[in-house]
Image (cartoon, rainbow, N blue to C red; front, top):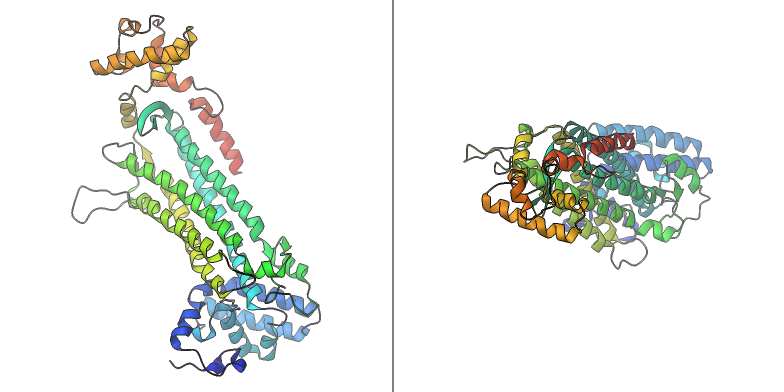
Length: 462
Ligand code: ARG
């Protein structure tokens, strides 16, 4: 392919064409074409404003609208031949429009620059993406609540340091993730507010000499307000960084859940099964059923962290206003959008395909003296200071360990050897059910509380 300087809209200023390598290096159309809907939406709003202000004629507007409908249809059907000679999505669309409608197409760029155009497109694209992500997050959180409801009273060991700590219910455990993903949803909603401002009208950097109406364009495009400062509007990408930071936090939560799913699915643990459609086999070991989806999600978390670092570093030390560096904002941003979108979609489905092995959870609960704290609390209620109770129970645990049994299997006399205050009512406290039921306050794991939390969760989901 030979290059021809005259193909560029700015050819007038140049005496030699760029090399094919430079052309490929500087073009963004391969990855920014995904913003074509937003680009067209933005252009139509801009053209409507230009006509309203008498900057272009009503006929020009009609031609632009007619032409854009054709361009949109051509892109939709895959007919439009994207060209790196035209660098990016903006010039490709403008060129095709001009081929279709002539001078009106050439007037579209009046009072506008690709700098404010691209900033507008990204914000529109991101706003749409956030709205998609919010729907997926809602579906996923709904699936977590469904699972929590099914297993609201199912006892499992709660862990600290990966050692059996105290009984909790599986429902309570799932609701912990409901909370985490709820905060993620709040973060996206918050990032959306700062994304939803209109850069258009800033032109290249300083504003434009035409009598434009930015508020009109903002309203047309559903932006909450216009960006106040033209230099800031065309150059900063903090909204994209903020969004990607929210993605990184979300993926961090996904990675925690994934890690637990992988662990719970291990035959050594056997707490859950994940539906087969989320697992794969081994090409060599016939017995294997691998939790590929959660493992991969755990891995993709690192990828999203990487995109956040890319964007932060891309923006670091950039002088005002627009610099070509900013073209590099798209791939990390789009990759974060894609990764989070796919992950949420698959996790919402996967949560519905989790079945719990209550028997194995129960068995695990007998292996770590899970009710030791309950015994200490019992002694406190009998008048012992907590520190003394803690020590007495420590001895009882040691005795049970030596005997190879759990605390409830000790005889009353054996427990009394360390804790003379104990009476026969202690065994109600030492059972898993007793332990769970006694944590009966908001935020606690008592099944009654878990059910109340589920009702509140459903209300919050709307
Ligand atoms: N493709 C460019 C980008 O993505 C569009 C803006 C180009 N502006 C410029 N002054 N070269 O950032």
